Image 1 (tube, helix red, strand yellow):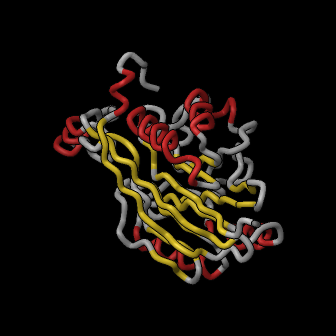
Image 2: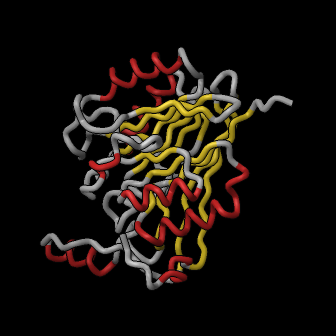
Length: 275
């Protein structure tokens, strides 16, 4: 029997070793349930950027597509592999000539899935306006596949909602907001597109959106920049979103938030150097 429904899981921003290992262990138990796995990895290597080692680790864990945001350039070895990567995206609205690509079409055997990564502009880095870029990219992709997935990495809730509705009117299949690391409770089907304002984050629960509480507190108390450290603790959380999409039409059929709290499995590798 031909498979008609595509089941996709999207992991919110993965923060440091606790987040990496949490996603790793989740996929060990659940990878076979999903046709396609997407994860935002811009904070995966000690909270900032993505090393080539961690990029390869995610591929081994079963992640099919990696998205990012404004922190993807923080580990300088990104420039050594972003051009040859076959599953990493950087925001599509970086200026022309920026290394890497902002969208890809993945062949999963029984269908093709397009993923587009976009960076918001409110309270964020100065990048190109995404509105016309995305309109033209969806039009191009729709000639190849009806399934179009978005990671919109943005700060402002209003910008996410407005841009999400815009994408839904252009025929997108699913829209995941990222960057603020707090999972929102507004998952819905918006004009046949699965939508959530923010997918949340994967990492240590005993901190401040995945980072160490004490350094975060010092920055707020003094206003003086201090190097952030990834939070450690007894528990980690996994924030993700599941969506079901009709293969033929690209329309979303269902969306479900995932919020799991469990023992910090990163403690199993205390001797491993954080990266």
